[in-house]
Image (cartoon, rainbow, N blue to C red; front, top):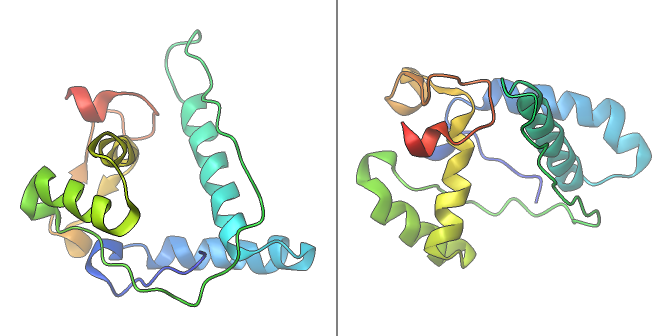
Length: 143
């Protein structure tokens, strides 16, 4: 819904990124009337396409991600993500309770960890989740 509380445990370490995306929204999205939530969806889709461009295989297909507009900005619903120290059972339970996700959908969402890295100050973990943290691939699940 366009609201991210960077003080919550699961969102720690995102403040700089959120600040940057919000500055982009203020100059590019808001003047067009686009909701912040739609802008976040657009930025996320573009990030996936950029990561797919980093794949080493020239024959790897570009992901098809349908992008729909019309999201309303929320009132700032507080969502605390699962504690990563508690394992897959907590992740799938929290995702089912909060969003109605099946176990398969929760695992698919976790696949976002194929990109980027953890920062000790934010999560207690340090380093990339995969050996190629700037490439959209299946490494998160296979490594």
